[in-house]
Structures are given as structure tokens and as C-alpha cells.
Image 1 (cartoon, rainbow, N blue to C red):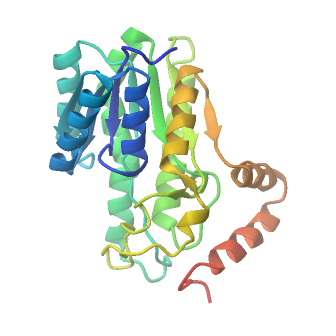
Image 2: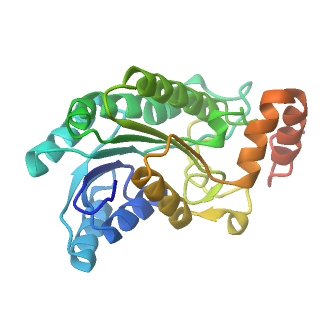
Length: 271
């Protein structure tokens, strides 16, 4: 499925992977519906894409933790274009705190964005995607396959997303739609600077070596290719593929490897 002239809805489109996806899709000639809370930034990006790539695009203020916002996002897409070909559930936040220290509200906040945001948007978009035999994408994580220390809420939300998408795929096995679970490895973006600490405040700086990570532009290209090829699952790094494979057969070994990796973080939570 080539993306030219397709109608694509992206959540969390104002920065990071979402912004890179918008740019990549625009390069391939898709028409866009961009949703995010940062509406001014979103409008600036929309104007840029229209000007540089001669596509159609609209910006919609959307907080995916609010079901009514997600419904409004999808309704605007239908009112503007009359159909939806692809929904990309990209909006996401992370956290960094040991569970013993974390306020429960932090876990709820992460789950509301990463899991419930995906559920809300997919619920309203699915009838339209069934009509076009299009694609539902969830931007998940390797943390949805293996729990990461200090990220209980994040890993739980991505495990939940993966399970939700897996069921959606099986339920619609004979309906002609594609469900794509996209799992980047650690990606250089603002997700770590915006991560919530144990009290729900943004930590403000990355604890990892961002320069050694894959870029959001690289992730966007892989996802765009995956949509065009109607891929089922994308695990984007060799390290991620190895971890998923080893975890099936040597889970205790992977526990130790993950612990040792996270223990090397700046200001590690693991003592």
C-alpha cells in the first residue's frame, strides 16, 4: 500500500517520533490529520508540511487521555477527508522511578496516555479503517516485551498496548485490515526529558546516551515502510530482536542483562 493520497491520523504529532512520522508521510504524499496537546507547535508543523510538500493537512488539539478529544480528532478527519486509511497511535509518555517509591498516580498517568489513548482513538477510527481496509499502528516499545527496571508504568502500558493490538489483529483476521505493532529500541527524542519522576514531575534531563541511539527520523522511515508493506510487527534494533528471542528461552539471563544495562544509567536507581 503506497502512502500517496492516503489519509493518515497521527497522535502525539508535535514532537519526537510523531513529528518525524508526519514529515516522512508528507514526503510520501500522504494527507494528514495531526493531533497533539501542543496546538501552536502543531499548527506551525502543519503549515510547514503543506508548504514544503504540497499535501493537505490539518491540526487538531487532542489530549488522548480524554475520550471526547479522541472522538473529536477522528470526527475532524472524517469531516475533512471523508475517510481514514491509517491511524498511528503514537502519543506516549514514560516514567522513571522504582515502584516502591512511585506515587500510584504516576502509573495511572502513563497508562492513560499510552494505553487508554490508543484504545480511545482506535475505537472511533476502526469503523472507518474497516471501510478502507486500512491499518492501525501502535508505536510500542521493547519495554512491551520485557519489563525495564524503574519503568513499571511504562512497561505495563506497552505490554497492555501489545496485548490490545494482538487481539484486534486476530478479531479482524478476515476483515482485510492490518494491525502493526511498531517497537523501536531506545530512540533519541524528548521522551526521557519529559519522563515523570516518582512524584509525577518531569525529570528534565535524559539519563542515557542519546547520541548513541537511533533517531526519530530513522524510526519514522521504518514505520512508513512497514505500513506500505502491511507488516505485522517491527522490532527495530538488533539488540531488541536479540532480547525478545533470548527472553523466550533464557528469561533469567535476560533479567540479569537488563538489570546490568539499566544499572549503568546516569544517576541509576539501581544500587
